[in-house]
Image 1 (cartoon, rainbow, N blue to C red):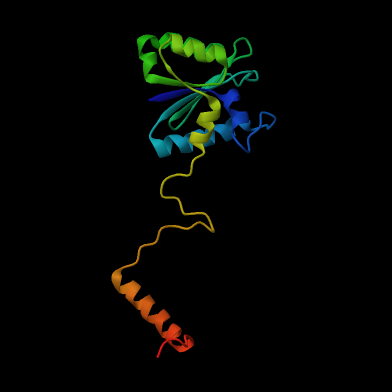
Image 2 (cartoon, helix red, strand yellow):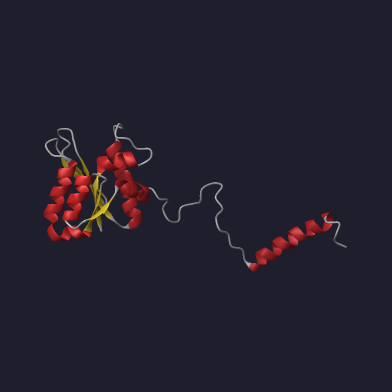
Amino acid sequence: MTYIIDGHNLIPKISGLSLKDIDDEIALIKILVAFCQRKGKRCEVYFDNAPPGQIRDRKFGSVKAHFVSRNITADQAILNRLHSLGKSARNYTVVSSDRQVQAGARAAHAAVYPSEDFANLIIEEPEGSPPELGADPEVSLSENEVSQWLRLFNKKEDGNNPSKP
């Protein structure tokens, strides 16, 4: 499955990112690249208002970024992309909280994922990451280790517990 993402709609939904940042698009792309690597997915992300000379498509691993001109919005570019996909649009998921984009995606039979929900999905901890400090990771001990610990604590307990003979 490939996600088609309204980039400037998603950025404000991710903690630590802001549309006011100079490098907000690149910061989002880095997050998307990590997400795609973890989940084995592909993304197409659309950004509008590209400065002159910056209008182009760029590939970042499994993420393709579309920087669209000032003559068209990212919303329109997304809807155009869905239209060009025809019946295969049903194999795509559009990420946007914009109602018009969502309606266009549904009309093209693409799935819709609100930006707020997708932001939570892409910032999840990767599987196998170390636990946070203070977290209680599940630890399993062998029977031998348990016996050793019990002997160690029972010895201390025997010397300090007046109820034991």
